[in-house]
Image (cartoon, rainbow, N blue to C red; front, side, top):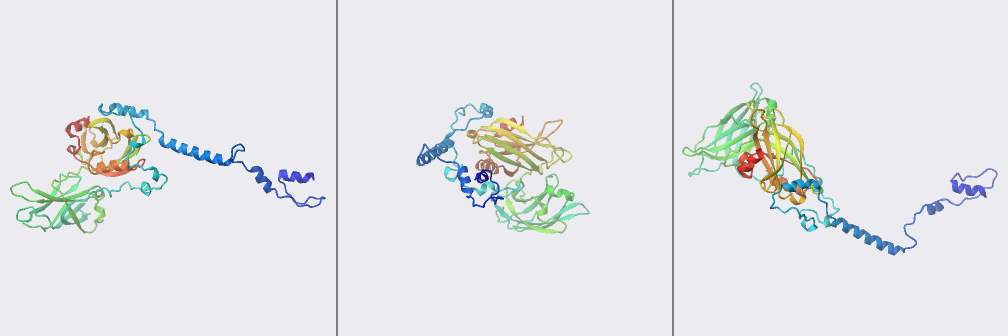
Length: 419
């Protein structure tokens, strides 16, 4: 009947019709599935041939993706023009043989590496310090006097000091600073012929309570010598006073004495992150902040800014600098500095980071310097290698600032960097 064919085409209700005999209808679903099914094969080519063609085309596509050479960006032309002529960088070989071993091989493609997704705290300071030789222990107590607004430090005793004299003993005494100020220092009495001296001497440092979070205690242990210069035994540095106590009550602390031959000059620290994008040939150094910088002005403060220089073979190729922060020893920048470095030259360059004090009248002075790169030392080299090992991921560390003569490259390089 006519009404039954219409019901199949329009999908209306197939219930009984008034005045017509009731009859079962054929199920429409098999017909719809047959009408909607899309053919995945061609009638002209057998299915076995099509499967073989797909596998062959897939292999060719994989090979093509692996052997395609990246194009050299025009942004790197200026970098190559500044390189020394003896470096042959005009002909660049991007073949697979030149890829460093640290890059993942084709066997590990597609595997998840949890270490790449490990989040690091911006203020993290662990995991990078090398083991330090110790030479005894020092005991002291801390207490804040709210009435006098002063930090009271009592040097109690030292144990197991090394012998510096021929008699197998030492004549120890202790110097103490509350950094970053080094003009005000205290010193204990000298104790003769002992390796376990008991000092019991208290010293007061005038400082406001809310400023203690920006201060460090520095103890230097010396061996007194009447005829020659005094020998340094070691030192103790307390970075965060509130990690030991809230200072409302007297807290007794024991610390290992780290061996040292010269008194370290604390110029402050800088935190920055490094990130390298191999495909783009772009390195980003983000200057995050500094802390406990050396005071360069009469007011006991500084106007710091950071200057970063890209070096290659002792020659400066480019330089960038941050904004200047006024009247502070703990500036916060969060400024990114970008250098275009081709992948084939990333092992030939390094970065010099200089924290400068801006002076409106005279010359800008250097507060401290540090360096990172394959030719740097200690944490500077470690930070650089970690950046290359984890591309496209920002790696952040604190770096201690050193004096000008600590910048590798000699005085001529330092003078060039100041310009």
